Length: 309
Image 1 (tube, rainbow, N blue to C red):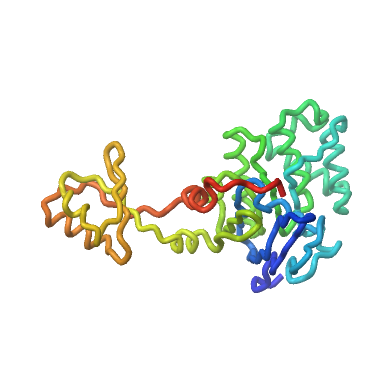
Image 2 (cartoon, one colour):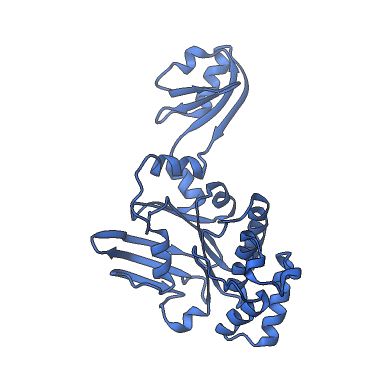
């Protein structure tokens, strides 16, 4: 596949359920070999969008293309999809389930068994190979479901809340595994409520709220476009400079430092010079960019969620 062709293109997609609009005029692209974070609060429309991407539901308006083509059965084998609702067979042995899922993707048994052994070892679950689902913890079951998603070596991996049910140690483990997919130039899309995790993994993000796109682009573009010019300052003196509204909009005092929000058009280096000239002792002067969590809270915090979508 050409690197110029998007792994996924969503153009003007809308999905309604009766009078409720779950997704409204949504557009974005996911480029090959990138990790794409699909972010938003509960009920924002993330799962509905993912279901349209993989062909479970059909958009009322708009177009979804994968690898430059409309969704079709032949494209299904290039996708690995981990849904938010898990679906293992409770009384079936783990190895038999994984063989079954591999067969659904037309993987020969010999190849499937090698991949199963590899992934069970990678997930530290080899000793559970002949156990039933009911013998496994929720976190272990989540890992098995992940294995079933990647056995056919998909080009596009779509993970809906992949860290749900995992303890912090296993969240870190899964982040390492997904980082390996980044190194293999696979395309990964995942939805999550964990902003810190998204910030560590993602090249690009989209944030949606109440069925609509709020902000999107590369992680760097999003942070730069967000536009808050904040300085973390530790100093003694300089109060008159910090009171100059042409330089500083607000000062938030913490235990041993201050967060300074610069006025529009104010230059951070000019502020630093003014502080030094005033006789202030400056021991920390650091420009701080907003975190994804900051952006998420400001964009969707306090808004009432819609019915789950």
